[in-house]
Image (cartoon, rainbow, N blue to C red; front, side):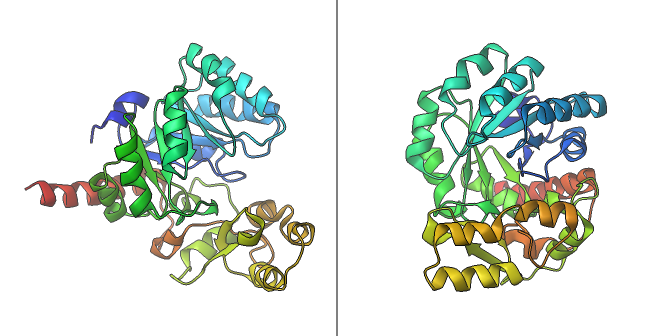
Length: 310
């Protein structure tokens, strides 16, 4: 399936893997790229040297294009921005900040710049500063979220900008991929389903929690703090939401989640760790390889789109 995004990134299929902190490391990114999609290394809060090593390790595993996601609130964002330019990765996706200061350097290195947005206004602003595409991410996604749903956000962003739009949030099967194309997207970005793939380095407890998730298992903490985060419910979320309802301070609430994602990903603590996952977790039923997953997604989507077009 060829789209403006597959042409822009030089990939075979319009599937982008989300740049999830602690989760999106080089084995996963390389496997997604090898399967025809665009793998992403998630820099998260990591130091620049770690990101450089991840990029170099990914290059050993694949000769296909891959990208790096930079959280611009990372204290080492300046250094990471330089590393990706030096290493000439294919794509940089960004979140939690304005990438404008880095765009000229990345463009000079031949890197495609793709910010993640949760509103039309931000998408328009980032198009003006030279973004090559945007990821319109709905509130259904895991981790830090906005307010608009994928169904409402994507078509409004598509109408507002002339650059290609990638849909994200709540997509976990071929039906979601096909729906995203009907909304005007040129590709999809997925996180939750890739967390549970064979090449994902997360603890098996984390994968099992996603595989067993029901539709009602998704919870959002931190709405009162202005930093809402979607995870799967557990003892930590129950305690957090109780304290939040009682008017706990930001400091008290942050203390509960400090290091929570590492606890879940590395230690396998799915009771008190932050098991970040989107509302699509209930659709994830089996642990597949990245290639098996991408082939399945594209076969399902192609069949549905062929029915629509015929």
